[in-house]
Image (cartoon, rainbow, N blue to C red):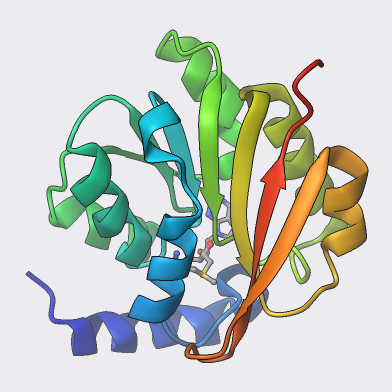
Length: 190
Ligand SMILES: C[S@@+](CC[C@H](N)C(=O)[O-])C[C@H]1O[C@@H](n2cnc3c(N)ncnc32)[C@H](O)[C@@H]1O
């Protein structure tokens, strides 16, 4: 298994190659991981997706809660990072571009998601990609479903507020860089 130091080196290299796609210089800290995981209502989750898995820090935490299996769809667009997660054999399916989520759900006969965990750097992705992924979230989350996302600024707040019935923001200082965690709840009737 790749050590955490090696993971950090690989992640930094991928960042240098594609800074706006990778969006940060190092994987999320255990503090940010815990803050993200604590927002998930695990008893309500039958099926969920993780977007932008990087080296798999959240993937491991999700698998430790949900167990291995069919109920988690993981997306990582960078082929080297995707291969790193696959090599760990966490027992979950890993796909490429998060924009393909609706198609993957159709293929796997999954109707709706209870929750999506996102690390995607929405604020720096091309605006049309960010808009397309927000549309994907509209389509795939169940009414009352949750998006748990982190960002390094409050830039996305109005965009999330436009699409979700409720948006709560908290702040995690112990991460490089410190991060805002968004807990966005979709309207119940849609
Ligand atoms: C800020 S990193 C977060 C990695 C990891 N989840 C963490 O918190 O340490 C964002 C990740 O999103 C991935 N990404 C960017 N655009 C994507 C897309 N359209 N589909 C899937 N992954 C994407 C990047 O390659 C990068 O690994």
